[in-house]
Length: 451
Image (cartoon, rainbow, N blue to C red):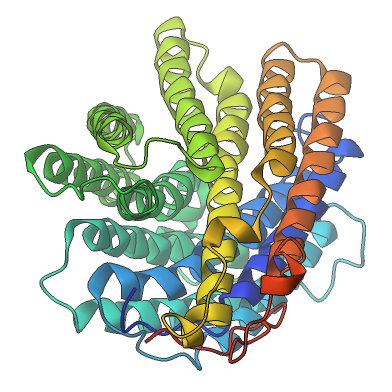
């Protein structure tokens, strides 16, 4: 990370994301949304978007503001724009949730808040896309992980556009029959663009770089990862672009989704082979906690892929779509997010606090900022709860699911507490905590830069 500044607002994004995750898990514990309500019920939409936007998207945006510059060895285009983007995204999410509560009859139905929510979210994500896009554009030709990110950002634009169309459709404000057709049949494309393109594809690209960096493994840029990139990008293009064409031609989108699934499965298989190679080729023989837990996230992804194929073969795919989405959102993406947060927060805090005195004063190691033995049990509880929750959904046991959600909530709060301790340097030996010239980090803002 030599020469790359610390992103000022990344910690604020992380804090907002964790707050959304805790709230979402509390709602699941209370029995709000799916499975107590149908998948398309407004209550479920509240829960889905709280996790997809509030937890996963804010987490990913905060991480990208820090790590896109690392991927391309250039500073972020603007370190000022993330703050207005965060304000707009949080405000837009709040309006969106209230709009769904209007549909549920929980609050007054007029005026509809969904168009305002769509406008605020579109503006916030537009700032994110502009800032990251300008950073990537200036760094051409892009290294392999950054190409994954670029494809994911294109999928984010598609996700937001489709989401805006749905919001205006709910408010009966669509100006054309073509947009109405997209609103009526485009939900699978919205899910694929968001969950598969924006969240998963970006996580794959960043994972290539972070796993190699944190495990001291060789960076990959050969035929296999390039094939994974092109097949994955092709799968997303077939699903989103091809699906939109079929909708406008008044044809079922199923052929596009099936072709996309085949391409995507091969891409994921190649990606999995690359990740196994990184673990085997690492120079750091003792795997740190974040990499151990990332392996469980990848196991969740592989399980979801195999389960999806089996369900499709048995004709039960759409009956169990909620189970698959839950496992992907919380086991793969959520588990990976928490695992990498544990390392990223420690790493960035170490750079911010001790970067100015490196080579001048004795300083702690990154690992001295955390106590892995204490956090380990909470990560295991989190994954056990997610997998138990997935089983509960598969066998239609809502009470068991709520108990699993409660365990997820306990684990998440405990992991968040470890992150706060890291940020406050609570686990660093007192005599070595703040050598002369070191900066005590702020909880939510990064002020120092690497050299």
